[in-house]
Image (cartoon, rainbow, N blue to C red; front, side, top):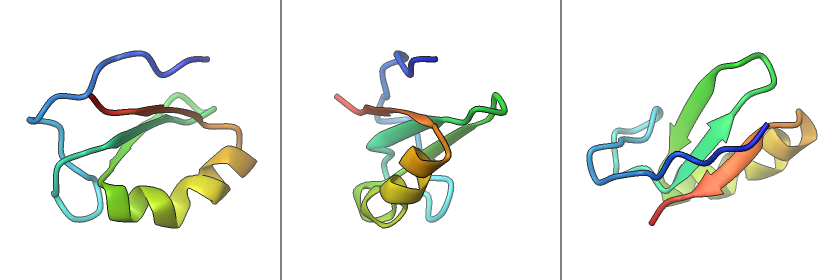
Length: 57
């Protein structure tokens, strides 16, 4: 699984609504978007569960 769709300025963080900088595609098929702050906070756990991660532009 790869996270290939490009983030745009219209994509917003699912936690705080700031501009999204990271897309996480979950093994279950779900998708989460995170701003820089929340990406740093959750990236380690997302990698542990096998999420595919891609950064914004």
